[in-house]
Length: 121
Image (tube, rainbow, N blue to C red; front, top):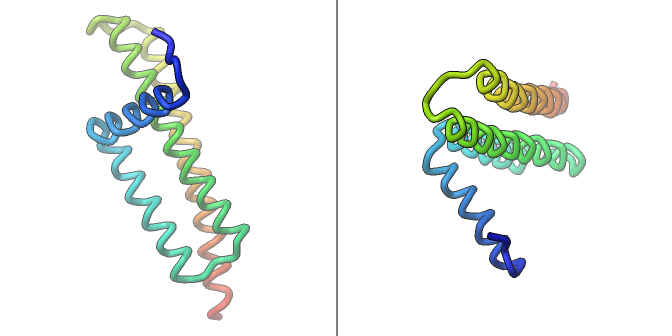
C-alpha cells in the first residue's frame, strides 16, 4: 500500500492531521495555544529570531502530539483492549515526549515574554 505520487503522500499526511484534530482534544488545544502565541508575537512585534523560535516550538509540540497519537493507536490495535506492561511503557514514553516539547515551548514563551516586558520597563 505504498503511495505512488508525492501528491498522494501529501494527501495521506493531511488526512492524519485532520483526523487527529477531530479525535484529540489536546491537539486542538495545542493548535489554539499556538495560534494565540503567533498572534501575540505579531501584536508585540517580536524580533525575527524570537518569532522563529516560537514557531519552531509550536511545530515541535504539534509533531510530538501527532507521533503520540500514532503510537497510542498502534499500541491499542496491537493490544486488542488488553493492558500490557510494554504497551504502557510505549504510551507513557510518547506522552513524555509531548510533555518535554511542551516544557520547551513554555520556556521559549517565557523568554520571549520577558524580552517584551523588558521593553516596557
